Length: 311
Image 1: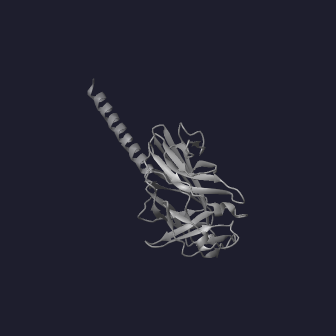
Image 2: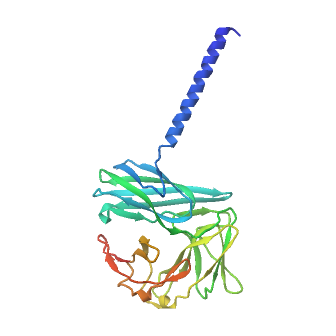
Image 3: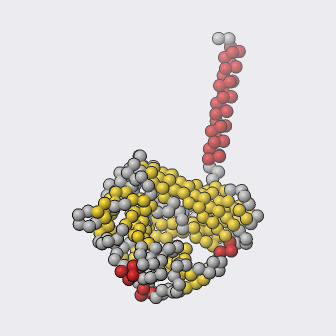
């Protein structure tokens, strides 16, 4: 081959190599633009109206966490859309939730709607009203989650002492499992000869929901762990006093905030269905299946809606 052709081909190869390197660097730069929120360091985000900002947060599924949003700006209307995916063989999980922050409800607010499973979350913040603002974001640790093993194989959830209670197992809000053994997000049990209710479920955190009656909308137990290839056993409480109450439906009960120290915890609940402040001795609290003592219940009023809240 003539020497001038060899030199031309070498120059073309070199130019092509530089082009590939440029494309690779540009691709890496674009992929790294989303800010990372971590559990140990707050993140400040600058928002302009109708200009979505995306950040990423990796949750290992070991702790119960919420997202704390704070701003000094007034008249802010902000929407958060979260999405994540994970897979264990044929078992695929999707997470979806949305949340609204309005500054008239408070300069600091807790988003407690993050589904609690291992995944890297894509969090998109959109300022719908307010011009611009600086938003401080932080991960708020609310304690250890029940330990569970994730995998493709399902697990068994056994509920004892259910009596005549009609139970279903339901996924936690925002958690969408796609598993060959689960046709929908709600599962019904088989009843064993000894009267236990048995569910075959994919790994995850589940709710047990009992049909209510006599004014009670539903009885619900949440964050029940089901591990791949293992069995979880639950003793269902017989709450005859609650079941006999009239006109005390337990709909719309929502956790708004929680903190505490080694001795005492403080929980803020939105409880619009309760017409009056319950007495401490009338409230039963369980943590990890162990009973706790209610020391005080104090009523506050939501400035915007006037709904009851109890601490």
